[in-house]
Amino acid sequence: MIKEARNDHCSKCGNRSELLQRLKQELKGNRYLSREIMAKVADETGISLSDVYGVATFYSFLPVQKTGTHVIKVCRCVPCDIKNAQAMIQFIEQEIGISPGETTSDGLFSFQLVGCIGACDQAPAMMIDDELFGMLTKERISEILESYRDGAMPLSKVASKKIS
Amino acid sequence: MEEKRIILKNCGVIDPRSLLSYLEIGGFKSFEKARDKMSPKQIIDEVKKSGLTGRGGAGFSCGLKWEISRNTKSDKKYIICNADEGEVGTFKDRYLIMNDPFSLIEGICIAGLAVGAQEAYIYLRAEYHYLYDLLCSAVLQVKEKGFLKHMNLTVFEGAGAYICGEESALMNSIEGKRGESRYKPPFPPVQGLWNKPTVINNVETLANIPHIIQHGATWFSSMGTARSKGTKIFCVSGDVTRPGVYELQMGSSLKGLICNLAGASDLKAVQVGGATGRIIPISMIDIPLSHETVMGSGAVIVFNNERDIIDIVYKNLLFLHEESCGNCTPCRDGLEAMVGIYERLSVFNGAQNDLKMLEDLSRVMSLASLCGLGQAASIPVMDSLNFFRNEYIQRIEQSMLLRSCRTIDDQCPREVERGNQI
Image (cartoon, rainbow over all chains, first blue to last red):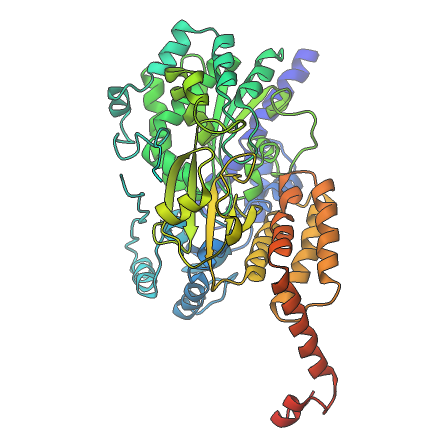
């Protein structure tokens, strides 16, 4: 009986430890974690729906509300803020016609302000989905957004430090 | 002032996608020495003697941490590399992983031997997903070469939460839970992941290990200060002409780093250590960088004379308030109250007792918060009050003047002149 309990605990551990990756996997085919998706994950892992919901809502990369095809995340922390991040944020608002926290009516872009993304040497910086864009200017932002509209997504440009 | 590139020496030299290029310059010789010529106790003694301390910001003795886990009886032990680099102004781990992932992995392999761990994780923040494939490929190559026979190493990606850089929240995250901090004790080296002994080390800490094993503890401890040995990678950003990573001996001058190397001028202040880092006024920038003085994660954000210190502290608090896990009242409600005060200060609506309120909140939060986020959130508040108090006083005086104009119906000359309705 003790062995069964231990095995059951271990299988639950195993299921539990996969939860984050499981939820991320679901996002590959869906733009957000709907109630139906979370219920399916709950069912398959044996974790309660409320627990799954509690975990999903904790993490910023696990959206539980509809998001756009592409999520623009602009860093608003101090190193980017003092390098004109605010001007970039206002420019993006004008370019795509929405404020942070919103999604465009065509569903192409969602727009968020986020904490430090570790590109302070390239400030001001943003991410679109998993791609990092540093040394932002209005011209660069226009080009980047245009390429996403065209469907040809540019690779991120994260410059390495000078090699001495 | 010159850099001392030891941990960064392979960056730009090896191909980060190729283990072969790392082996060609002597990579994994330290691991082979540790595996074939040293006992676990000897490895731990060497790391302890070196004086290596945590490079993520907490500065705990690396060797002591390993020793505690080694000596704790358990059927299973874990190594976790904390690559959840969320601290504001910090990008050294990103740089290391991008340019030399193999030093880190070699350090993890040696840690596994020392502690007797069977399982290891690299907890990579979600924002660094663009490094995920590179890191996984590096791990696979190391495994195929036979350096991971003693341990299973997995890259575990986070899901976007600054607090998961705190070790107990990180463990909860791997366990599939909300990334909330745990009460301590027990501490992770005794009871950590799945309640088993767990060593959690920063990327930079682990990247030091191959060098210590290769050159010895005496060599390593000959660099630095009494309590801060070796070198440290600093990340300079803000009002400088040459932002980036710089590796210096512990105890090097902050002024030398930001002025000589990073090109700072017209200085007002520097924040060292991230969002909860110390604020250093220009009068003190000769300060040496070490655990004994100021350091933290190594983030160095430079501010020139155009910058508004109150606004800078406000933006830091907004970030911390957003990222608080919410588990404990002092941090959750303390930050809420602080943000409220700074919000009013930012729109020139400060009050006479704001400064006393900030000081009272700081005292409670630093004493009673569950983890480092809440405990240290008030550091920039208190430092700015200490060194830039005049700016706060001026802001409050301006606020009172503005309010007095607004509350005197039809008597405020400016309002009468403008013909505004109050």
